[in-house]
Length: 108
Image 1 (spheres, rainbow, N blue to C red):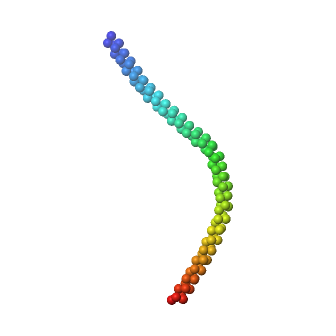
Image 2 (image 1 turned 90 degrees about the horizontal axis):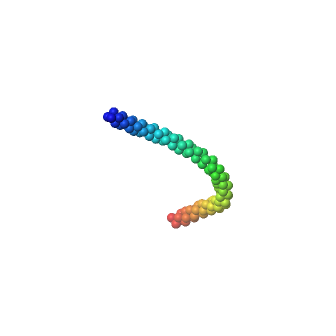
Image 3 (image 1 turned 135 degrees about the vertical axis):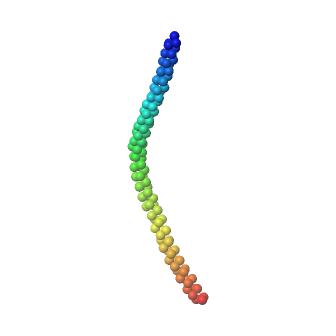
């Protein structure tokens, strides 16, 4: 009867050891599979996102080029007018300097 109890305990011990090693093996395999699935899903997501957004990026660049050129054409008139004012102001400033310079010479 003692041998039967020792055999039973040994059997339980062996089952516990096998169960723990099986759980460890299963958890490692599950972790590996989940990492592979995550990597594959990430790669597929990036491919789909690239396909989806690349057309929007192209359209946005085209719109930016068109609207950017329209804006440049619109403000070109303003830029030319400002350039004329700047030139005129520079001439006026030189004339003012000459006038004050001649007044200063006459006063001295």
